[in-house]
Image (cartoon, rainbow, N blue to C red; front, side):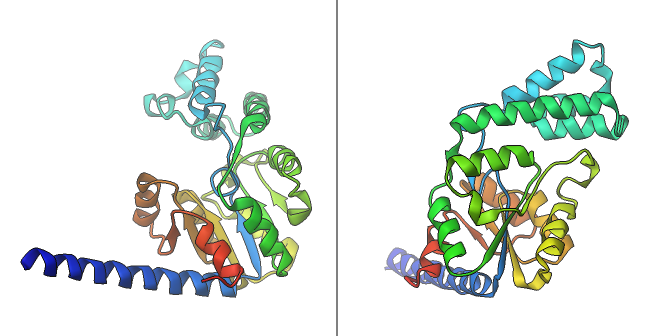
Length: 252
């Protein structure tokens, strides 16, 4: 009897949590007149067939081959994140030719990655549906805008965002979690932060949205991603974009 009671209680609690999430999600979606998308994660898995870890290692090796091993800390060398490597070098040599060449190498790797990038489930129809119901869309990302345009064109989605694609520039200190790219999008679209919604999958996305005053919807493709977002303070997190699409289509 105890186990049955415990099970019933647990099911009731889970149902209440689901209802709460649905209500929060419905409110976030209903309020959004402008939707700001992170790129790698919510729209696609950019490095699905072209390892980001491998790219980071190659950038580190490229630096070491030029006698620049000391530019990175051990933690930065072991990060397996190309953006960590790029930003670390920029902090020590801001605006230098070295940083410019490193950024160009990363952009070329990202462009190669688009050839095998995998669309995030439900992202394509969600983008098209949000556009169809009259919301305006923008991309706010730490990836190169060239990469975003190439990928969106390959999926027939370019018109859903054009011209509002805001990505990595030479001002690397303004990458997320700095809110620069979000503010660019809002200013260009003449949108108030409260009328927008940011969809992101990392703590830096959430922090940038919070700094810009934009409501945030977290996308977490696994439990680890969800924990990182929750720990960063994200309140509305989904494991799939399907419920967002259903809300837009009036199915939930």
